[in-house]
Image (cartoon, rainbow, N blue to C red; front, top):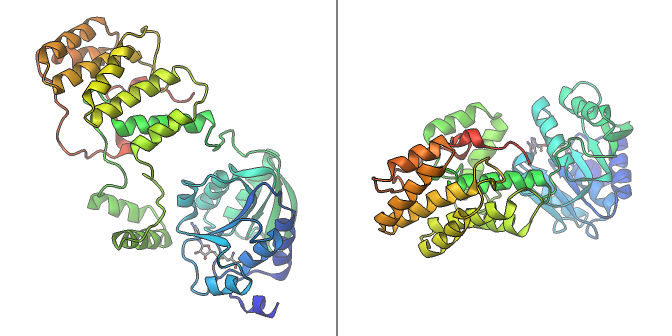
Length: 392
Ligand SMILES: C[S@@+](CC[C@H](N)C(=O)[O-])C[C@H]1O[C@@H](n2cnc3c(N)ncnc32)[C@H](O)[C@@H]1O
């Protein structure tokens, strides 16, 4: 107790006791996550209650205090508790474990507080506990969190002690579930894979990824749109990246091929999933210069009935496959064959954009534009954007 009293922090004794009490009650199937650890005063209460190291716990902080490690080390937790440095929302991007006790004491701004709650809630198990700091009245963000949780009955309010509210989960806050196998996640990943490959762009261009050399204008933009603490963290992480330290990144983690593999290995029941996946594999082969393999895929798909449209775009798979097949022939130097296929597509497709593109290349050799992509993934507007489906 004497040591705990000496740890720097704002945590009051009744709040500390309740953190310990509810962490102890947390369902065994999940782990504990703490957002905002500072010097570890709350970390040790949760760790003790939960039963670390027998049970798993992760602490997240923008910047852990220098004495954080020694403080949790005093209780034997220094190796047992996983620490993730950086903004909590960044770490959500790579998260995949069920949570049975969640403590949020990070950024208290209205938007950040609500965003933290909405995203981390997706991993909290029904029957799991959520503790929210600074709900004693004067902070709008944390109070909004409590309202959002109780208004629709997603959580049951249990108690408030020492300025921390404790709630138990009934069901998810939003209808979106971040379970990796939910159709929404699969569909979003499909969109991302497709955009990264440039698979629906008639020119087969690829966008620039957020992790590739942002121009100065974007740095300035980021500076104005983040808090000073967030900017500090971003700059620190960039410097650490340059120095070769491994840091977790909020975006652009997996390469296109591994994501394509992921969507193949995690099938969900959505229309034309198999044909869409096959088409993306063909695009991947095309990109990698495996022209024969790409042709085989595209030629097979080009024979599909026009009613079979992509899962994520309302366009016939056979039309895009025929387009790619013609393009591969051109890249392989088979102009005659390419021209015949472009002519065939121009004559049969019901999509004016594809008709126009194919018509142009009946007499003009196709080449993937060599200019360096400048468009960011999020700004990547496709000629066929109007055909995009919004949800499964
Ligand atoms: C009040 S302190 C936490 C105190 C700690 N829970 C305790 O009781 O001893 C808030 C912490 O949240 C961290 N923080 C602020 N914004 C954050 C964010 N977006 N992501 C992660 N941590 C954040 C700060 O670095 C700071 O250490």
